[in-house]
Length: 285
Image (cartoon, rainbow, N blue to C red; front, top):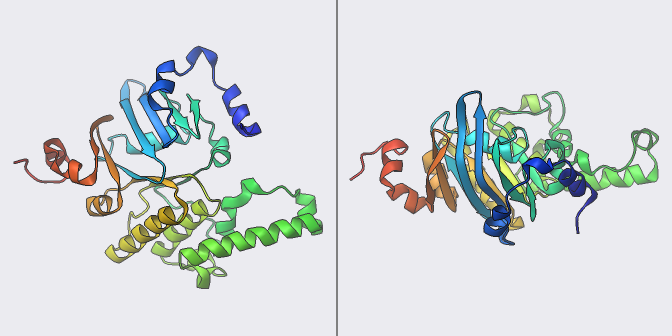
């Protein structure tokens, strides 16, 4: 059954630029959490994405790799509605879209982190994690101020959700600390907790391990894998550390100058001669 928010999103799609029926036939599959079909994106005369297509299965960790400027973040920006593709479309939550407004993402079960930290440094860890539940609040601001029963119940429910995700990411002892006092690695973990607290079906991670030590990267990979195993969510991961990508991902898509040049399991991608030359720093045999 369509939610009111999903219906509103669908009404905003321009009929003149509807997604081709072929998208329904080729990618609308119940086992897909997300499917991109022939996405093209340009900025002026520069082609950022060229006919990019791939699917993300339910419960799959899908990595997207490539050098700077390959189009990795552009893919996430199209999925999350920050960019509108010139052509193509996507299937999300069993609905076909040309463009999903960013404000509708949470209601469609999508959460995202960004390359740069986007936390509230002067607030506590608990408050930062709770910010991921803002869209779920139903009590009015007046009810919150007056501490009416409904607002109190809502606050208790949010506190329970925050405590649960904090425990899963080993942040319980840090909940009352101000975010600015945490190490960089812990702040990245808080950002992951905020993305996970609402129980998304699809998690978009844009370089979640950038700037981390090897130990912190291993820990973060463990938290991401554990979240997938515990909830069955799907993950799209952009990451420059090839070792992390190959150890964490189920499937890998490789972009070069905005085009997909390889797609497969980590083992298949590692054997691809073009990928070896371009991205793994080795000479193809």
